[in-house]
Image (cartoon, rainbow, N blue to C red):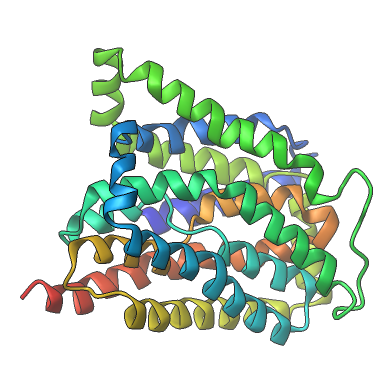
Length: 315
Protein backbone atom coordinates (compact mmCIF):
# COMPACT_ATOMS: atom_id res chain seq x y z
CA UNK A 1 0.00 0.00 0.00
CA UNK A 2 2.76 2.45 0.93
CA UNK A 3 4.67 1.73 -2.28
CA UNK A 4 1.53 2.60 -4.28
CA UNK A 5 1.11 5.81 -2.27
CA UNK A 6 4.76 6.74 -2.88
CA UNK A 7 4.56 6.10 -6.62
CA UNK A 8 1.25 7.95 -6.89
CA UNK A 9 2.59 11.01 -5.07
CA UNK A 10 5.81 11.11 -7.13
CA UNK A 11 4.08 10.57 -10.50
CA UNK A 12 1.32 13.07 -9.71
CA UNK A 13 3.95 15.64 -8.70
CA UNK A 14 5.88 15.16 -11.94
CA UNK A 15 2.68 15.46 -14.01
CA UNK A 16 1.66 18.61 -12.12
CA UNK A 17 5.08 20.17 -12.65
CA UNK A 18 5.18 19.25 -16.34
CA UNK A 19 1.83 20.81 -17.20
CA UNK A 20 2.12 23.85 -14.93
CA UNK A 21 4.92 26.18 -13.89
CA UNK A 22 5.69 23.83 -11.00
CA UNK A 23 6.51 24.74 -7.42
CA UNK A 24 9.35 27.00 -6.31
CA UNK A 25 11.27 25.41 -3.45
CA UNK A 26 10.47 26.71 0.02
CA UNK A 27 12.33 25.50 3.11
CA UNK A 28 9.03 25.28 4.99
CA UNK A 29 8.66 21.81 3.49
CA UNK A 30 11.50 20.80 5.84
CA UNK A 31 9.56 22.16 8.80
CA UNK A 32 6.45 20.29 7.63
CA UNK A 33 8.46 17.05 7.34
CA UNK A 34 10.03 17.65 10.74
CA UNK A 35 6.71 18.19 12.52
CA UNK A 36 4.70 15.44 10.81
CA UNK A 37 7.28 12.69 10.31
CA UNK A 38 10.06 13.27 12.84
CA UNK A 39 8.31 14.87 15.84
CA UNK A 40 5.87 11.97 16.52
CA UNK A 41 8.77 9.50 16.62
CA UNK A 42 10.39 11.55 19.39
CA UNK A 43 7.50 11.21 21.86
CA UNK A 44 9.02 8.03 23.25
CA UNK A 45 12.53 9.45 23.52
CA UNK A 46 13.06 10.12 27.22
CA UNK A 47 16.10 12.06 28.33
CA UNK A 48 16.64 9.64 31.23
CA UNK A 49 17.09 6.86 28.68
CA UNK A 50 20.45 8.42 27.79
CA UNK A 51 21.90 6.09 30.44
CA UNK A 52 21.22 3.24 28.00
CA UNK A 53 24.00 4.65 25.84
CA UNK A 54 26.49 3.68 28.55
CA UNK A 55 24.78 0.38 29.34
CA UNK A 56 24.83 -0.71 25.69
CA UNK A 57 27.86 1.26 24.54
CA UNK A 58 29.15 -1.64 22.43
CA UNK A 59 25.91 -1.77 20.41
CA UNK A 60 25.89 2.03 20.00
CA UNK A 61 29.52 2.01 18.89
CA UNK A 62 28.86 -0.77 16.37
CA UNK A 63 25.93 1.21 14.98
CA UNK A 64 27.94 4.43 14.65
CA UNK A 65 30.89 2.73 12.96
CA UNK A 66 28.61 0.84 10.59
CA UNK A 67 26.42 3.80 9.64
CA UNK A 68 29.05 6.52 9.49
CA UNK A 69 32.06 4.59 8.23
CA UNK A 70 31.37 1.22 6.60
CA UNK A 71 28.11 1.98 4.76
CA UNK A 72 29.24 5.41 3.47
CA UNK A 73 32.45 3.73 2.26
CA UNK A 74 30.44 1.09 0.39
CA UNK A 75 28.17 3.79 -1.05
CA UNK A 76 31.27 5.68 -2.18
CA UNK A 77 32.73 2.65 -3.94
CA UNK A 78 29.47 1.75 -5.69
CA UNK A 79 28.87 5.42 -6.52
CA UNK A 80 32.29 5.82 -8.16
CA UNK A 81 31.54 2.78 -10.31
CA UNK A 82 28.42 4.47 -11.73
CA UNK A 83 30.61 7.15 -13.32
CA UNK A 84 27.94 9.79 -12.64
CA UNK A 85 28.42 12.55 -10.06
CA UNK A 86 24.74 12.95 -9.19
CA UNK A 87 23.93 9.25 -8.89
CA UNK A 88 27.00 8.75 -6.71
CA UNK A 89 26.01 11.69 -4.48
CA UNK A 90 22.45 10.40 -4.08
CA UNK A 91 23.74 6.97 -3.16
CA UNK A 92 26.22 8.48 -0.71
CA UNK A 93 23.42 10.51 0.89
CA UNK A 94 21.50 7.28 1.46
CA UNK A 95 24.66 5.81 2.94
CA UNK A 96 24.97 8.48 5.64
CA UNK A 97 21.28 8.60 6.66
CA UNK A 98 20.22 5.50 8.57
CA UNK A 99 16.83 4.40 9.81
CA UNK A 100 13.69 6.10 8.57
CA UNK A 101 10.01 6.47 9.20
CA UNK A 102 9.27 2.73 9.30
CA UNK A 103 12.35 1.55 11.18
CA UNK A 104 10.52 1.40 14.52
CA UNK A 105 7.84 -0.72 12.88
CA UNK A 106 10.45 -3.31 11.82
CA UNK A 107 12.09 -3.16 15.26
CA UNK A 108 8.78 -3.88 17.01
CA UNK A 109 7.81 -6.65 14.57
CA UNK A 110 11.10 -8.46 15.07
CA UNK A 111 10.88 -8.29 18.87
CA UNK A 112 13.94 -6.05 19.12
CA UNK A 113 14.56 -3.56 21.94
CA UNK A 114 12.46 -0.47 21.19
CA UNK A 115 14.23 1.60 23.87
CA UNK A 116 17.53 1.17 22.05
CA UNK A 117 15.64 1.87 18.82
CA UNK A 118 14.51 5.29 20.05
CA UNK A 119 17.98 6.10 21.40
CA UNK A 120 19.51 5.26 18.00
CA UNK A 121 16.85 7.38 16.30
CA UNK A 122 17.75 10.35 18.47
CA UNK A 123 21.49 9.85 17.97
CA UNK A 124 21.11 9.60 14.20
CA UNK A 125 19.06 12.81 14.09
CA UNK A 126 21.72 14.61 16.13
CA UNK A 127 24.30 13.31 13.68
CA UNK A 128 22.50 14.75 10.63
CA UNK A 129 25.04 17.58 10.79
CA UNK A 130 27.80 14.97 10.43
CA UNK A 131 25.94 13.43 7.49
CA UNK A 132 25.83 16.82 5.76
CA UNK A 133 29.52 17.37 6.44
CA UNK A 134 30.31 13.97 4.94
CA UNK A 135 28.25 14.80 1.84
CA UNK A 136 30.10 18.12 1.59
CA UNK A 137 33.45 16.29 1.76
CA UNK A 138 32.19 13.81 -0.84
CA UNK A 139 31.37 16.69 -3.18
CA UNK A 140 34.71 18.36 -2.57
CA UNK A 141 36.97 15.36 -3.09
CA UNK A 142 35.15 13.43 -5.81
CA UNK A 143 34.36 16.30 -8.18
CA UNK A 144 37.70 15.90 -9.99
CA UNK A 145 37.07 12.15 -10.43
CA UNK A 146 33.80 12.87 -12.24
CA UNK A 147 35.32 15.86 -14.08
CA UNK A 148 32.75 18.14 -12.43
CA UNK A 149 33.01 21.33 -10.41
CA UNK A 150 31.86 21.58 -6.81
CA UNK A 151 30.29 24.97 -6.14
CA UNK A 152 31.92 27.07 -3.45
CA UNK A 153 29.36 29.90 -3.56
CA UNK A 154 25.94 30.16 -1.91
CA UNK A 155 24.90 26.79 -3.35
CA UNK A 156 27.58 25.03 -1.34
CA UNK A 157 26.16 22.38 1.01
CA UNK A 158 27.70 23.99 4.08
CA UNK A 159 25.38 26.96 3.80
CA UNK A 160 22.06 25.20 4.27
CA UNK A 161 23.19 22.86 7.06
CA UNK A 162 22.06 25.26 9.80
CA UNK A 163 18.56 25.57 8.30
CA UNK A 164 18.23 21.79 7.97
CA UNK A 165 19.32 21.17 11.55
CA UNK A 166 16.95 23.84 12.87
CA UNK A 167 13.90 22.74 10.86
CA UNK A 168 14.38 18.98 10.98
CA UNK A 169 15.90 18.45 14.43
CA UNK A 170 15.73 21.35 16.88
CA UNK A 171 12.16 22.51 16.26
CA UNK A 172 10.65 18.97 16.07
CA UNK A 173 12.43 17.98 19.30
CA UNK A 174 11.28 21.10 21.18
CA UNK A 175 7.75 20.62 19.80
CA UNK A 176 7.75 16.97 20.94
CA UNK A 177 8.68 18.05 24.49
CA UNK A 178 5.70 20.44 24.49
CA UNK A 179 3.19 18.01 22.96
CA UNK A 180 3.93 15.21 25.44
CA UNK A 181 2.51 17.46 28.17
CA UNK A 182 -0.70 17.97 26.17
CA UNK A 183 -2.11 14.49 26.69
CA UNK A 184 -5.19 14.72 24.36
CA UNK A 185 -3.05 16.03 21.47
CA UNK A 186 -0.33 13.44 22.05
CA UNK A 187 -2.88 10.61 22.17
CA UNK A 188 -4.57 11.86 19.00
CA UNK A 189 -1.25 12.01 17.11
CA UNK A 190 -0.25 8.54 18.33
CA UNK A 191 -3.66 7.11 17.43
CA UNK A 192 -3.67 8.63 13.93
CA UNK A 193 0.09 8.40 13.43
CA UNK A 194 -0.08 5.96 10.52
CA UNK A 195 -2.55 8.15 8.63
CA UNK A 196 -0.62 11.33 9.43
CA UNK A 197 2.59 9.71 8.21
CA UNK A 198 1.06 8.46 4.95
CA UNK A 199 -0.70 11.75 4.16
CA UNK A 200 2.43 13.71 5.02
CA UNK A 201 4.58 11.44 2.87
CA UNK A 202 2.21 11.88 -0.07
CA UNK A 203 2.22 15.69 0.28
CA UNK A 204 6.03 15.83 0.56
CA UNK A 205 6.56 13.60 -2.48
CA UNK A 206 3.95 15.47 -4.53
CA UNK A 207 5.59 18.79 -3.64
CA UNK A 208 9.20 17.74 -4.19
CA UNK A 209 8.52 16.02 -7.51
CA UNK A 210 6.34 18.96 -8.53
CA UNK A 211 9.24 21.41 -8.12
CA UNK A 212 10.41 23.26 -11.21
CA UNK A 213 13.86 21.71 -10.84
CA UNK A 214 12.40 18.19 -10.66
CA UNK A 215 11.15 18.56 -14.23
CA UNK A 216 14.75 18.23 -15.35
CA UNK A 217 14.18 14.48 -14.83
CA UNK A 218 12.39 14.45 -18.20
CA UNK A 219 15.45 16.00 -19.86
CA UNK A 220 17.66 13.48 -18.12
CA UNK A 221 15.49 10.65 -19.46
CA UNK A 222 15.77 12.08 -22.99
CA UNK A 223 19.53 12.64 -22.98
CA UNK A 224 20.88 10.11 -20.45
CA UNK A 225 18.33 7.25 -20.23
CA UNK A 226 21.11 4.85 -19.25
CA UNK A 227 21.21 6.47 -15.79
CA UNK A 228 17.86 4.85 -14.95
CA UNK A 229 19.12 1.21 -14.99
CA UNK A 230 22.48 2.30 -13.59
CA UNK A 231 20.74 3.89 -10.59
CA UNK A 232 18.51 0.87 -10.01
CA UNK A 233 21.45 -1.55 -10.08
CA UNK A 234 23.50 0.73 -7.78
CA UNK A 235 20.67 0.98 -5.22
CA UNK A 236 20.09 -2.79 -5.18
CA UNK A 237 23.84 -3.39 -4.83
CA UNK A 238 24.02 -0.94 -1.92
CA UNK A 239 21.10 -2.49 -0.02
CA UNK A 240 22.42 -6.02 -0.58
CA UNK A 241 25.89 -4.98 0.61
CA UNK A 242 24.38 -3.26 3.65
CA UNK A 243 22.55 -6.44 4.58
CA UNK A 244 25.70 -8.57 4.26
CA UNK A 245 27.70 -6.19 6.45
CA UNK A 246 24.95 -5.83 9.07
CA UNK A 247 24.34 -9.58 9.23
CA UNK A 248 28.04 -10.12 9.87
CA UNK A 249 28.43 -7.35 12.49
CA UNK A 250 25.32 -7.76 14.63
CA UNK A 251 24.27 -10.69 16.79
CA UNK A 252 20.62 -11.10 15.82
CA UNK A 253 19.89 -13.22 18.89
CA UNK A 254 20.33 -10.05 20.98
CA UNK A 255 17.26 -7.78 21.12
CA UNK A 256 19.49 -4.70 21.33
CA UNK A 257 21.69 -5.65 18.39
CA UNK A 258 18.60 -6.58 16.39
CA UNK A 259 17.40 -2.98 16.81
CA UNK A 260 20.78 -1.67 15.61
CA UNK A 261 20.63 -4.12 12.68
CA UNK A 262 17.47 -2.46 11.38
CA UNK A 263 19.17 0.94 11.50
CA UNK A 264 21.81 -0.40 9.14
CA UNK A 265 19.63 -2.17 6.58
CA UNK A 266 17.09 0.66 6.25
CA UNK A 267 17.80 4.25 5.28
CA UNK A 268 16.03 7.54 6.01
CA UNK A 269 14.78 7.95 2.42
CA UNK A 270 12.33 10.81 2.94
CA UNK A 271 14.95 12.88 4.75
CA UNK A 272 17.39 12.04 1.94
CA UNK A 273 14.87 13.23 -0.65
CA UNK A 274 14.30 16.50 1.20
CA UNK A 275 18.05 17.09 1.51
CA UNK A 276 18.71 16.15 -2.11
CA UNK A 277 16.51 18.99 -3.32
CA UNK A 278 18.96 21.41 -1.74
CA UNK A 279 21.82 19.89 -3.71
CA UNK A 280 20.38 19.66 -7.23
CA UNK A 281 22.39 22.74 -8.26
CA UNK A 282 25.52 21.12 -6.87
CA UNK A 283 25.26 17.54 -8.11
CA UNK A 284 22.65 17.73 -10.87
CA UNK A 285 19.13 16.31 -11.10
CA UNK A 286 20.47 12.73 -11.18
CA UNK A 287 21.10 13.03 -7.41
CA UNK A 288 17.39 12.27 -6.96
CA UNK A 289 17.42 9.01 -8.94
CA UNK A 290 18.93 6.66 -6.31
CA UNK A 291 16.57 8.06 -3.68
CA UNK A 292 13.53 7.56 -5.92
CA UNK A 293 14.46 3.93 -6.51
CA UNK A 294 15.31 3.42 -2.83
CA UNK A 295 11.60 3.92 -2.07
CA UNK A 296 10.77 1.01 -4.37
CA UNK A 297 13.61 -1.24 -3.12
CA UNK A 298 13.64 -0.65 0.64
CA UNK A 299 10.08 -1.62 1.63
CA UNK A 300 9.97 -5.07 -0.06
CA UNK A 301 13.60 -5.59 0.97
CA UNK A 302 12.73 -4.96 4.64
CA UNK A 303 9.66 -7.21 4.36
CA UNK A 304 11.81 -10.01 2.95
CA UNK A 305 14.36 -9.66 5.78
CA UNK A 306 11.59 -9.64 8.39
CA UNK A 307 10.07 -12.81 6.94
CA UNK A 308 13.15 -14.83 5.99
CA UNK A 309 15.76 -13.69 8.52
CA UNK A 310 13.91 -12.41 11.58
CA UNK A 311 11.40 -15.25 11.32
CA UNK A 312 14.24 -17.76 11.73
CA UNK A 313 15.81 -15.84 14.61
CA UNK A 314 12.57 -15.86 16.59
CA UNK A 315 12.27 -19.65 16.44
